[in-house]
Length: 260
Image (tube, rainbow, N blue to C red; front, top):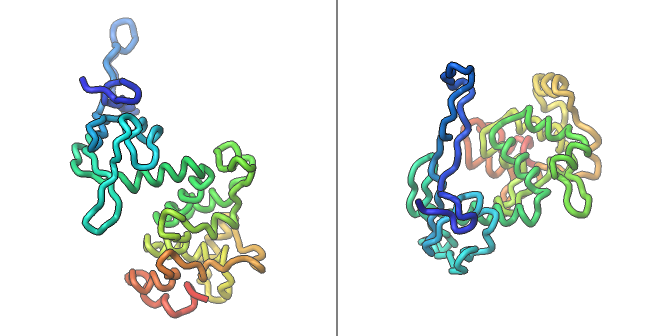
C-alpha cells in the first residue's frame, strides 16, 4: 500500500464510529475487537509525491513540494496561480483539483494564528449564525488566551477588532460584507447595531428584542470606525455589494442602512 512521504503511514484515515452504531456483545460482555473503518486520505501532487492532507498542511512552504522541492505552481487560464493535484478522500476522487487557495490560507494562518478567530467570525457572519457571533463577541480574555486567540506579542482579539476586521486573504471583506454575501439580514442588523452609528430609530423593534435576549447592545461608538464605510479590495462597501446581490437586499441600497 502506498504511504505518505512525510509520516510514512498508509494513505488512509481512521473514521470515528457512529454514536448510535449497534455493537454486538460477546458472551463475556465485551464488544469484539474490530478493525477501525478507514477512508482514503491521499493528496497526489503533480510532482508525484503523495501526502496525507494534514501532513501536507503541516509541511507546506510557499509553492514547493516539502518532500522533493519541485515547484508545484502552474498558471490557470485566467493567469492566476494554481496548484493542481489528485485528491482521494472520503468524498471520492477529484482530479485536477486546485488546492492553491487552501494552502495559501493555511500558510497565512500559520504565520498569523490569531487571525483564525477573526476568519471564523466572518464565516459565522456569512452563515447567518447569530448565536455563534454573539458568543464569540462575549468571550472574555481568559477564554481567548486558552483557545489560542492571543498572538506572540500578547495582543488579544477583542470585540471591537472582530466587528471591524477585514480579511487580508479574503478580498478585504468585513463581517458586514460577509453578511450581505450570505443573505443574512439578521446578522446585518446585529452588526449595524453594534458597530455603526446608524440612527437607532431605523432599527426594527424586533432587533432590540433579540439583542436584549442575547445580552448584547450598542456601546459607545464615538471615535470608532463605522463598519458601513469599510471597503473591500475592489473598493466596494456593503451597500455596493447589496446592490449587486439583490434578493433579500432589495430596498436596502441607497437607504443609508449599509452606507454612510
